[in-house]
Amino acid sequence: MDFRIAVVDDQRRDAEKLQQNIHRWFSENYSSKRTVKCFADGEDLLREFKPAKYDIVFLDILMNRLDGIQTADRLREIDNKIMLIFMTSSKEYAFEAFPLHPFDYIIKPYKVETLNKLLKEAVKFLDTPDPIMTIRVSRSNYEVPFGKISAVLSRDHAVEVVMSDGNCLLCTMKFAEFEEALCKDKRFIACNRGILINMECVASLTRDKSTFIMEDGYEYPLKIHGRAQIIHQFTQYQILRMRKKCSQ
Picture: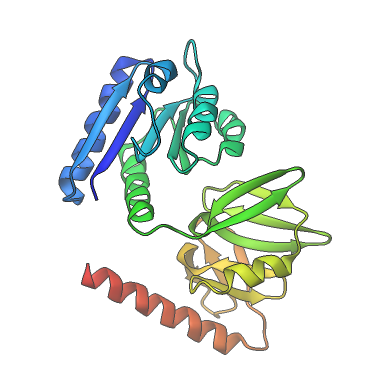
């Protein structure tokens, strides 16, 4: 797959630095061709934008003239499948961008390692599209890739969805709706009553094998009855992941 990437930032030095870092990552990790074009602002991009012209758009949120949120809103009207990655100096702005279904966001100034990890996830997603779950929150719907869900928890009369980036969505959907959709995917397992976890996001098991410790630091207990089966399923999944990595 040839990747077409747009970088939209009114700070020229920031845009060019990001452009260089993207080129470097592809040169070192991915053999596909790529083009990375910089734009001074949202209007500059929109003047030439059309459906399927770009695979990924990096958007700075705080820009003069047309900001990143406004630009993303207009991009979605033209191409609702475009992968949006926001760049922001504060997580507060990232929440404003969430209704526009971004793939992720980068906090500025970012570490190269953070960008590299994000590029790896983005390329993997575009090469093998992740299933999408529509999550209803109040009067809004959020289309969330399965891989961005770390855990789903039943909370009284609501369901809490813990995202892999640390954010949480509190929705009024039924827990059974998540079970039906996610448990068809090999990554997800019900480790206890009212708890679904993404095994991709597990950092380790406690020594007594009673609790999953997630990469984000959250801990989820394994139910007593059926624990051996859960551990076996998790172990088999880890072996499968290792085999896939070794074959790459």
